[in-house]
Image 1 (cartoon, rainbow, N blue to C red):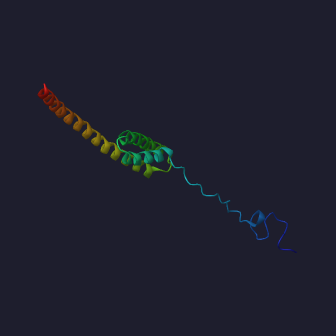
Image 2 (spheres, one colour):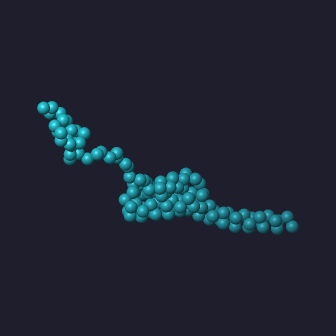
Image 3 (cartoon, rainbow, N blue to C red):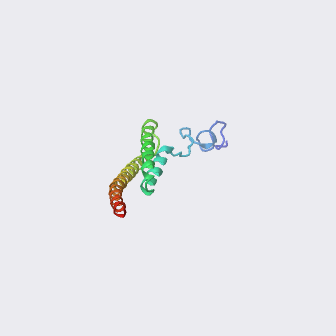
Length: 129
């Protein structure tokens, strides 16, 4: 009698059909979790907020908004990208504060110097009359 094929539904090695062991499941390929798109956008905008002068203030605000929305979505859907969202939030805050202070300094300097220039111009104008 041929022991390799005894008429049962099991394969020649004594496992399940085709020789596989009955308790083995087919192996599914590893699929990485999806990274949240808003967290990527928040990080890119946050970096641009630090790098780009003057408009970094506005870009930083958008970075803060996108990163905050990404954090909420990540908490709800358990997507990847929490670190990206945190980095975008930090960079957005730094860019907004940095260029907000710079813009405030420029405005104050313009107001201060323009007022002193008007007085000097007026005094010089009267000396020619």
